[in-house]
Image (cartoon, rainbow, N blue to C red; front, side, top):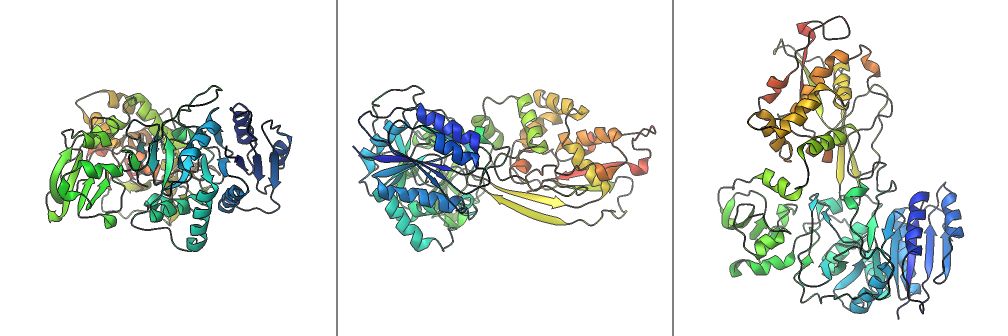
Length: 569
């Protein structure tokens, strides 16, 4: 039987490391097999991590602790840990924020036995994707009767390589590591990851060599998304949590793996089912790009395109979005106007699309009140993925929306905004997000606007929550439009706008202290898309009408402001 080493990749996180080691203790291993454990600790100021590694008792084979005297960084550390495959028959690489199923080792042995000599297999994933990390939409592989599927997307949330598989990748990497990752067939989300990423190179390796990772249909590892090299303090780990297989200890597992040549569940790096081509009209086969999630670069389109995008080409066929998973609608030819087969060499009228139906399809369990709380949560504190946000100096307002303060009594008056300066800060992560913050230095009135927009408990919140539950008035239209990530550059968030106007009476005159030092900066990427946008004309209806009472309220008509919250996209 193969001797597969378990390699734990640690840096400076103590609690996640203890949690992972506890899951390793609770797993099942063949009694007759020596299972090596290597804990590799990169150099950091947290000496407790090394102590945990040394003190951990491993009863299933030899244990080695490797303490690096210099900081390697994430990419080099993972590559060095992968090289341990040359010392055994293969390795299982586990970063310290993961948690494994009790049957993870038995699954890996079974997957190795089936795939290690298959040239098209570049590695084995212990993780099962339930989220398309590019489109931020639910993902599920089509069921073709087997316990696995294939994807041209390498895994970093529990992955295994045979010695041969790792050597093939390492050889390619040394030859191409200085070349740009960006290409028409590489997702933009992947190529934009930082230089700390080893994963983007492994994904491009799979694409260029025509190889795939074998994925399980139920995960044998899950990701907590703890704060670290490529995850922010607020994480977003729940977005990456997936159900684990076999949460009890047991011996042999009965798994039925497909051969890649017979599988109907083969996905590319965009999470698109490559087998859909054979369910389309014969004339398009070999000349069609599958773009159901709408994330593929148009520069990489072939003549025919199957896409959810409304494109100005002649439509040959259309399909609905009713069955689950989404590719089943094309396989079963479900009628509807959600996915379109285009001939890009012939002009046509772009079809109308119903984004609301897509959101209801994807997030069927989300109630209106819960949705509003999530929106406010994103605006006030969090971003779903990414590094810790940049912290501004005291008195410098920041945010993902640009806020203009205009005097509503004089349209022709010049705007007195002080030294507006835009700075774009781009955070790149391996977890599927490229986040851009737009930081602006503006007048004191703008400071107030940004501070108030992040607060909770204002009168507008009750209005917004009620508005989502009622029908037949603008609140309903706002709720439906607010879910869509459309570009409405002149439309703002009615809910935030209403809240900010009504909160004006509580504003302290000391505007310079309204932006506390260290306030988190909302991200303009995902947060701007999450913030609901109001339909045209609604902002005027929702504008607050304050009157001064000498207690910090707006004291005259000339001081009242109309607040325009523009999208940060």
